[in-house]
Image (cartoon, rainbow, N blue to C red):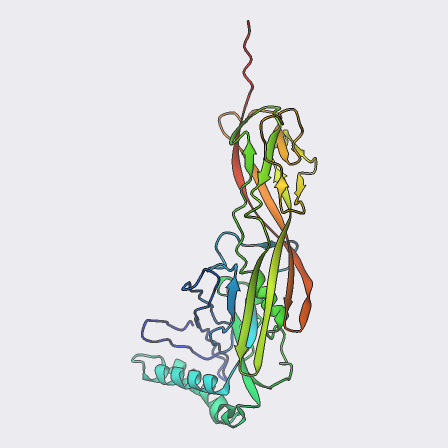
Length: 349
């Protein structure tokens, strides 16, 4: 059963209780994006089979407001950033959240009895049961750790793995769970927030070319340069951050038909030291082979070929305790461009 969220109330029902009743909850927070994105809001959904609070991670730099928007990196291989993780909360914040949601649930007209029983049992565990009064008397010695889930991936099996109920950990101790937030976890989450430029190459001839005519391709080097996103978390005794940087390293051209040749033959155009890729066509280069381009060997007829353009990005991160850039899996991002190919018209005399 899912908790109901309205403008006036947010009913967050506890996770697994003694009666084996399972509830899922949703929590939201505005995430600061910074660097020209001030005022933008990212809904970061809490998650899992256990009790959750909103994420306190902030993102700044070349970050996008919605991780599902265009410009998202696709990691090379099977790697993906974490779909869920655990973050600390102060004893004061945790106790207030539990008490507020207990009171909301108990005082909402029509609330089901099993929901009241569940949230009541959950509250008792942390107030009068295994823990005493939310460990407020030890608030300077440790924190509560709770599960958080990526809202765009909540249906994935990986997002369900953070199913431990809130637990207490002393300051400086390693939380006894997988995916406890660390600088590397922050770096991996920042990976998913990197906003990339639209991958459109300039073609000459533009849009419409001729059969057997080399078509030059190049990218605007002012747009394709390093971009970075910093993820930070400062809660209780934990103050960590990580910056993930993406650097464009190559462009792949796939003509959209087997009846074509690419330049170079592999279709992989590499970035120069000055950040350029390919070479702009100017008058006088007609007899030269383009350093980056394509030649179509047949007409596209009444339609167009889909030229697929994909840029590969080298990804590294630095952060708390990790000053030397460390590799993460390469990422790719691309799109299709329509190219009309016409037969060269010969005139018979």
